[in-house]
Image 1 (cartoon, rainbow, N blue to C red):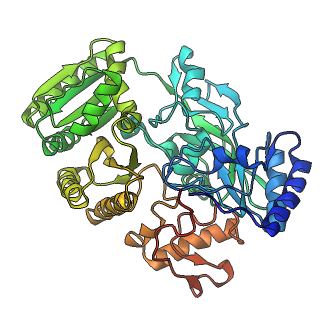
Image 2 (cartoon, rainbow, N blue to C red; image 1 turned 90 degrees about the horizontal axis):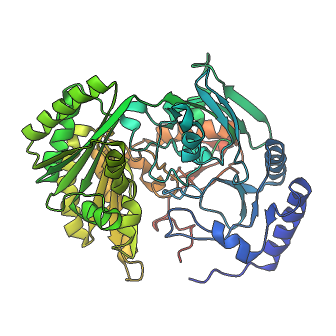
Length: 495
């Protein structure tokens, strides 16, 4: 759909703001040309697009501070953006707001092996941290599938996880310190190189705050020693339910794998066609279980996992016997999302989390929903911690299919909450899940969360329109609100 042309008042406003921002960020750091703005019109949730008013690309923390101070003083809305890989619409722009891009913040500032940490700028990619320390036998544990592209600042904003989060935790478990800038330009530091800080857990508050509280400009992450040995099992099952029961059985036996991922038949077929990882095509579900640690411990645990798998009905088991083979097992799982993109014009990637013992029930219900909505679904899971990533296949060119995919996704998320889970595991709420927040939180819960935002951003200039299904004035919180609309994301233009 063609975007409406801005009127004279908007053009004048754009020129006024751009002139002020160029005083702060000279050169090519302020973008106003429509063609140059196009790369910023969406994020990973590509069903929605709009052009931002302006994009500004500061080079250092002082420039970020001055930009935010100007926006605070002049009532300009700000959407912080990292690599733009968000899958919940967290970095979707606003037609009357600026994008504050952190793409120039790409330096690794310090590697401190004595304190097992690295200090990096938010634009450094997730994989870039591990690449910088790999030769010395270290790595950064969280590893989202998009780790080659996603930025560490975005990982902080969404509290990202990855295939190894079962044993080593999410972003929040691997952070030591942050530098961030508030909307009024104040530069704050929380945490540091030490393992824990006294007082309130400000680090926990900022992690997963989705750009609503401040703009992160520096991150101190925990580094881990690479394990002595890592081996993986590729286990095929005749049903999704059997695979889900195996996951519960492994955890119930007291085994915590480095990673435990699950794929169903459509995901297996797509990944194998794309990567040729040697996945079996005659199974309904596939588990990848990785064990790491001392060689003798890994050998023992492989035997235990194999025993549990056979007891749960496994029909095929392969065990990696080399590092290359282990990496090949993971290659298909890491490429599952782009692989699905080869078999469907569009897909909608969901993110919810459930108790592990509810996996068989949820998988059965998702199959019923697939029939109900007439849309295929391919499933990839961080099975060990119950983080689901159903991929709903649709064609945006077919009338009504996008809307059906959205409703299908909403039903999956409602199901997650119904069985005792939560709306998101690592993608965040953004706009995708904001109108479902009421299924998980009471109005009092949401009001209290917004009071926290009001402390940091009383005028709601930082990433407005995200996370909260109802809009409140901070001064009148709890009494005056705008009810949610009946149209899904009515403020976000569709293409």
